[in-house]
Image (cartoon, rainbow, N blue to C red; front, top):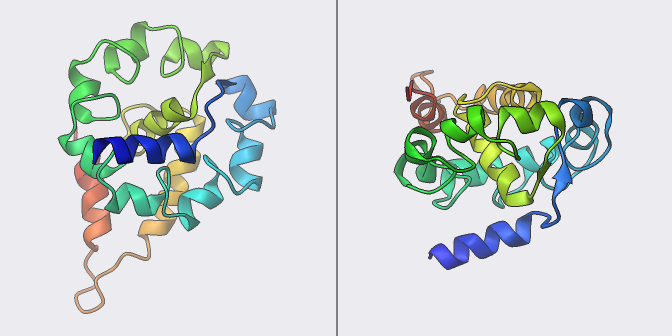
Length: 174
């Protein structure tokens, strides 16, 4: 099962490291730019978030079990999980975000480090869990909030299961 999930991630995302950061987000056209997010259809575009079922989509976030899913965030122990965010030292951990220098670090965001597709998937989950707050996170969460606005129980009007899943992801993890 884990091998299948890893294969899915590798197939869903570019393997080359692409530059990212505030400058790339604002001015670039590559796969980690606002332009790509708003205008393209592949991973990690806003279109793919809403319309795909592959890793990196809202469907996978809510229904998958591997990295990039709410299930993995809540139950996993590797990068892309709440456990790793709290306790890890490498990329994908809070420690690395504040002290590292590559992708998945605040320093890397400010200075244009390069990210692989797998790292981008971890970043997406960190954004959704509101562990980090940078411009791409705001764009991702705006699409997610719009998506969840339609997740209402038809008889009671209460938030649906998807909204509850995201709320659990966003519970304070400090």
